Length: 498
Image 1 (cartoon, rainbow, N blue to C red):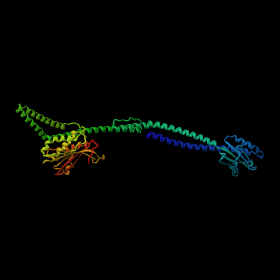
Image 2 (spheres, one colour; image 1 turned 90 degrees about the vertical axis):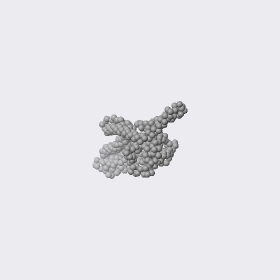
Image 3 (tube, rainbow, N blue to C red; image 1 turned 135 degrees about the vertical axis):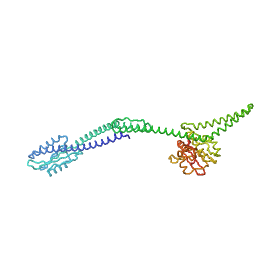
Image 4 (cartoon, one colour; image 1 turned 180 degrees about the vertical axis):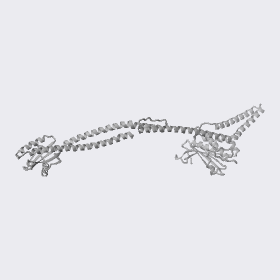
């Protein structure tokens, strides 16, 4: 429920309760006033009647009593009058009082006995009435009788009902008017400004930091809008700064990775020279054979085919090297890791043979694809393969396994998900705990002289982390090391053991 609606409902309820309480007290007060006025009126009639009866000097003048009673009966609010003469035990009453007057006679007698007026409320033939009794005396001051006047109270009740209805209508009108006024005011001063603030907050939450709220009213909501506008400006400036810093960092990372590439190319130079030198020697030899025996068309054709094959081989090697060295922005595409790993191994044929390293490949068929940059991932695998080969100066076994795994990343709350594991294991010199603790630190290297930059594993780790994966290392001094690279797989049906 909106704030304006809450105010529009809660305030009228409070006002209605206040008005109702006021109306109740008004009703009670009006009832008291009407009853007092009725009593005063009845007392006035009783006093007038008493004065008239006290002027009767002799009992023979009692014939005037019915006339006096009839005069009082003409008043519409008076139900009846009873006159009791004590000495003669005479009772005079109005024609409307035809039965059941004994209780009223008792009230008259009590007032005579106590010599003071008596009053009470009662019922006469189901009609509510007010009874007022008082004694009267003769000229000598002796009590000679009493009077009882019965007054209808229905006039009071009718008047109260009309008053209550009027009060109820007034409360209803005032409450309705208050609700309408509060709805209008809350809509103008609260609902609409808050709606603007909510729209601004939603736009800001969606990343639109150019959002500004126009509220110029000089109240708290206006101050809140101004604070929001300043916050949006600050967030926009922070966003621009973060983007600029991120671009600078990414450019720096690209420069570092490119430098590491060039360092790797330097390590490959001798091997690539051998790779290119061998086909060049073959080309030279076959060209010499053609030159010596130009008449032998069949032999010349065979030598020409060999020259073309070796030329294509050189071209392919150079293109692979240029493609690896070329500086370009990261790409995100669907990759099959098996061909990428095979191509990377081709770069190292010479080093593998020179170091007398045996390569054992255990690559699962039908591997799930991954999303990533092929150039960057090739740089990672090339670093790992080179490190493994260089860790076996006396030769050894390079075991390369690629398989799907369904595991969870350490420290992650996402649970198990499919990954592709690339394990590069060597039987080299291995590493101690101190070296293992620092191998991913920038510029840390165990290679002598200028053979290493100390950035290869740092860059590799950064690339794998950019691909939402991670690298694990196990090593034992004198037995070798194992580097395990985990990359998120695309297929959900990947099954395996972590």
